[in-house]
Amino acid sequence: MPETVLDNPESAKETLASHVYDRLRQDIISVAIEPGEKLHIRSLCERFEVGLSPMREALSRLSSEGLVAQSDHRGFAVAPMGEEDLVDITRARCWLNELAIRQSIAHGDAAWEEQVVLSFHRLSRTPRFEPGQERERSPKWEIAHRNFHSSLVSASGSRRLEQYCEHLFDSSERYRHVGRKAGVKGENREKEHRALMEAVVARDADAAARLITAHFERTAELVRQVLRDRAR
Image (cartoon, rainbow, N blue to C red; front, side):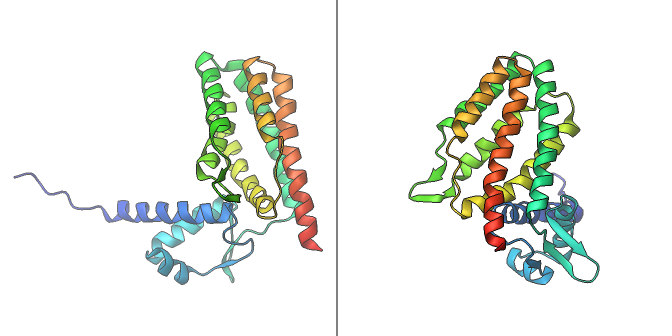
């Protein structure tokens, strides 16, 4: 008779924490939960049907990423958003992605080029919106968009640098979703993505660096206007 393997309580707790982390993270990034909103642990436990331990673990992970603010006296809350923070994120994102894309062009092989071209092709062929919902991004487009930007820097030779770029992508996504909810549209986004892909394939590091910076700054400027309007 085969030996029965008992479930590992620690492993089960980690799985629950990861599940809660993924769902809360998506709600925060998509601004389904508003910036500054308090995160009441017991209410969240009821919503996700988990205990205190995995919930605290998930919130701590989100706090380490800067998506959740933690206070000794006030508990947890969704990290606030503001123009100054957006400027700081955009500046850091431009610096790091410029470095990463230059390194990728210098060291990437033919397989990397193919990955960039393929990810662009998938992005360009994926509808940006769900049918009949022009303000709701298609989840498939969101994934394709993330994969394209990840592919551009995936040959940098530094996993840590790539992780920083991914972290800043998520931080900036919160602001992009604020713009989306306000009806802001990036009319030239597909042309910008194509130009980035073509610069990478041509191994033109200067052009790629210039284009990625302009791409990020253009989106940030649109969102800055939304933030200013909201602050009035």
